[in-house]
Image 1: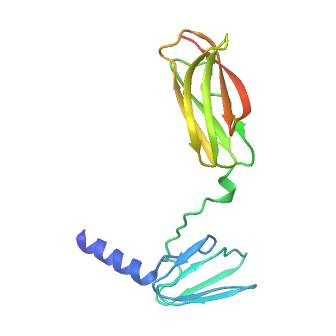
Image 2: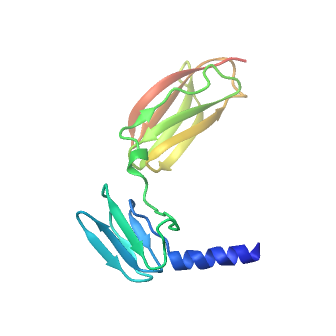
Length: 170
């Protein structure tokens, strides 16, 4: 097992780390990114940063056959970031004793997700902090509450996003 890990690490160092369609690339072998519209040449150990996207990209590196590359990035994938603030219906609904409440944030925001009884008294605060852009889910445990209808509200950056209803059945 130790020998297998050593061989893997050696291959990793020789082949490098490359991301063709992403935001950054690091290679220990050097090589070239090439497409119809651009060519980027780099030497061993050099960091290549930028957006590389094309329908046809040819990647050549010193000791890699192209299939040994490990794709990495610390950038979020744009398709996964919601385009608008949204509070979703909880699931399951009705529920006993817990449910999930999902919401979307298109940008980093100060979020408050709170639960109210039917007369408007706040019975729980599920989230009250800054959250990054993306889709989030909060779990609500209502085991200490009575059966009935409750409301939950999402506020982001001081703006009311939505209020929805949910039902606890015990």
